[in-house]
Image 1 (cartoon, rainbow, N blue to C red):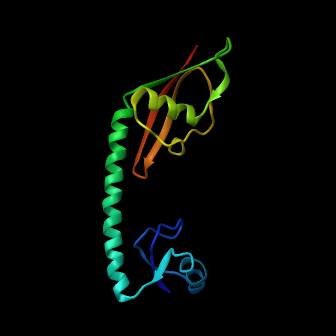
Image 2 (cartoon, rainbow, N blue to C red; image 1 turned 45 degrees about the vertical axis):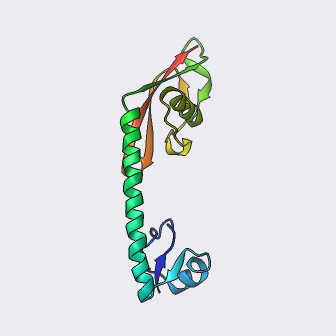
Image 3 (cartoon, helix red, strand yellow; image 1 turned 180 degrees about the vertical axis):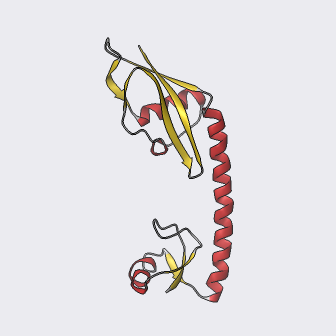
Length: 148
């Protein structure tokens, strides 16, 4: 069945895409949940408008992400924490701690889910934290953990 997606669906497509999907998938999931509508001639024309608006929004989001990247890449974010004699922290620095420090030191508000910190920082020193604000914009934020 040919359908037009009304919203982004993970693993299927993005808003405005015209897809051929299994009849059961369309009848039992996409259409009842309002995520797609059956593709007719009039709906196909609307899909083109959806794709244009999606592309404009995507370009605007990408431009905003690049601006944030240009602001944060040259900065070194300093976080103070208590540590033992060998440089191990008594706690850990989490993604939320990094987001709070970035907000305080640069004025840029980030979403903690955009930071890809594999595991919390547990040692003193300089660490690179990858940030992905947009599928095409990924950059590192340099975090320096110092003892208090």
